[in-house]
Length: 340
Image (cartoon, rainbow, N blue to C red):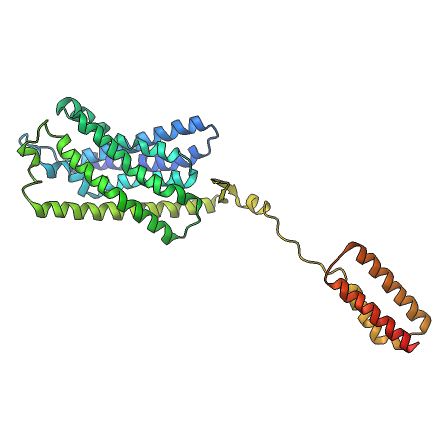
């Protein structure tokens, strides 16, 4: 664990800011049209992000005392808040790419998870002669974000509520945690000389309660931070999309971001239904009520006009009220024949 002096606090702040910058840069990379350039950009961002995770884990390792390599000193970062926070941000960035792109770009980014071991490769290979564990450790660190990308890939096309996103993140955490725990075991043996020495195993075989406590603490931090950071990432994503006037649209197996006005314009609003016979029917109802007060010639002329207007409307519009208008005309004619 580093001494929290001004230099280390400043370094931690810089790492945190760069991690945030990588996440913000993802939204800019997504806008690129050229798929080759976009792929290279995501690979570069992933390399930066996961190298920062590895550097942070190194910062929080306790230096060996009297030349002895003690297991609990090597795995110290796994039980600390800050290294797990940076790791959670890297995983949240993976989920963000999956949610925004849905294509294989998230796998390119997640595949750079091996970079967590980049700061330790020289020690693994050239000092301790553990090239086998270096390769295994690189593979395991890449698998952790890959699991998140795989689990979120199909869900990117489904509109989910907040609790559904929470359950999806919980599932990814459950599956990825055993791999994450195994990277700690690889670190213990990878940072020791070839052949398992008693010094390297000190802290593993000596105390079962310490091992149990280590697992409980790592579960708490890994689950808590990854789920919270992923949830915060979704909240910030939705907020910015809303503030910028965009709308996330899933169409034809892909994810698109469109202007809200543009998206609504593509879906024309249904026109209000117009009853073209309403005026004629209303006029005939009034005429039928006062027909007895009108002379025969004027009444016959008005009925003729009604018929003419009905025929004009009938030639253009075939609505439900057409039958009502026709029925009304027949009724008026019958009343006319009775009265005149």
